[in-house]
Amino acid sequence: MNVKEQIKEYITSQPEAKRADMQELHQLIVRALPKCKLWFLDGKNSEGKVVANPNIGYGFYTIKYADGSNQSFIKLV
Image 1: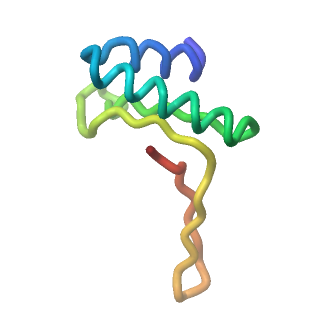
Image 2: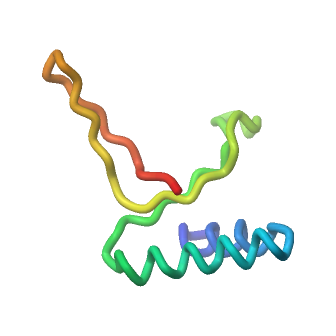
């Protein structure tokens, strides 16, 4: 399953009121940032154990530390 399908499945699994809000927000972001890198994190670790809430991500964010190192993350909504 690709990322777009995972996002669609996640959004459609939500209760109606939340689903409608999430779908509207997702569509607004994708229209505003059509070239953004989409991500979906299901919240499970490598063993399949739930360790966090699922997240939809849009693009990258790099944190630059005072020591000169940096680390890239996905941007989450």
